[in-house]
Image (cartoon, rainbow over all chains, first blue to last red; front, side, top):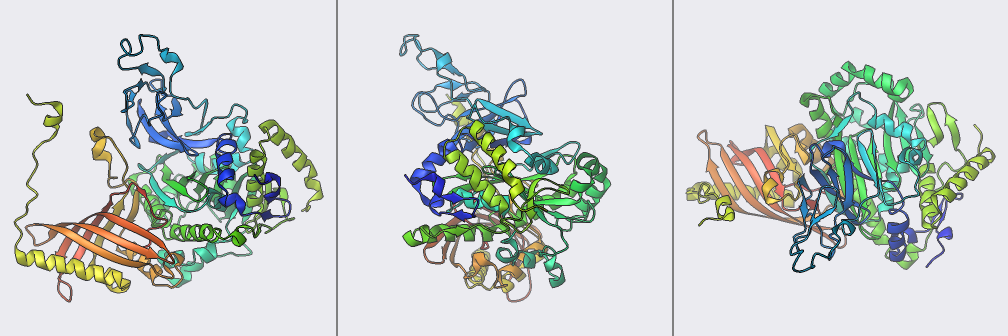
Length: 443
Length: 187
């Protein structure tokens, strides 16, 4: 095993590509990163009724997320305790119980084992069913309609885990009085790349957009004059936030309401309801678009298009993308139609932006099959030394929108966890890093 | 004695359609001509086959139990891979012919097989047509994808080089999780 301490140098902005390819490191990631972080499970709108369930994954582990009779949400491993068969094989639905189709062990909505066929004859009434329930996700946290879960008993509470990212996450999830909902159904697809390319990009990378996505604006606008709408400008005041492994890139807008991409009906609805946003978020946040965002390790969303997604790891060289479209719960169909359509048109496997991302990541992964390619360090030095704490309107550490501070923070947190530091040790390290900040670039 | 399983299998309308040879022939030749435009990368010509009011739609799909199978394919207003009007479809064509769409530059090589063409005539001359497709895509050095599914088209008779315009197209894949890094080709 390689020395994890040498794989990433976040102070110098250097990445050893082995972190994207090595099978042994990947197995450690499932345990130390995915096993010890808060992972997105479901949004409340996916679980409308008692007994509503979705199957999702925590890393590679299939879990059932289920609305209980008391309206709470619980999650458990989708694995029968008898021989490990998948208990439920639908992606979503409504159930009263979950019965394994191998030998018939049956579980209730909490995952408790409630029935074993031939209990008297085959088990001589000696099986203690209370000991053989499905493995429960011990901590499930609801945050403004979003359910996150973790296997870890030592990771801090979810809000503490978010740190200053709460300010940026709230800009999306706490924007409207009645919150958000997901358009029914997920889009799922497979990309042959390491999960960190996708997660890092949504944490930190605005830099690729004008080049990788050059053709997207051609699709969206017939008028060539409109295509420079999102080009980098010295006047846009765009900033990048990074902290606790999370990251956001934001850009200023003159007023909240008009949304050229989602169209006139949605714009009119936003303008009619914009007091909600100004009241809940304040003018500073209302006048920003949080363009790209990632909560460590693998939950991402955009503020430009209304997509939220999880990058599920599938081996060192593959991911499954699970993407949803989010809309304000109160927006009528005439308004939300524009959001839905432009989101699917831009960010989905057929999206006029998204198709280009998959192309990049699969090509990188292919190139790294070469031993020389795999041992050539990558440059993540953009904006190194230009970090600023608590820049106006940007709680936490921020940098220019075009920087890789977010990537360096993401890999630093990855390395902390991969070294198997406890969350207590990580908190102490974070405090030391913060104390050392004065030595870094002052404003 | 009939069982619950027997009762679940209800008789539906016959799937045998007594279509005239001439109509069947014309629709199949139209689909072959359309496929040729796409396989030859003639996107600007292809997009002209659609009517101004076209809905070009590729809903998502998920695994559901038999009991909830009516929710397997996403309905209107639910999640879709593509949910386009003609303006959006033309935008995609502008993009793929721009030379800077990196997911199709260099371009994929595709071969489309369109089969099992089933025609229901509407009273007004428009046709509801179901067809199966099997599309092979080869990309760059060794990447390959298969896209397999069914199309539900509404064909409207037209003047000119092509006998129909496509007034509506719904494309349903068999895959729920798409085993391709991108859907940068047309169906």
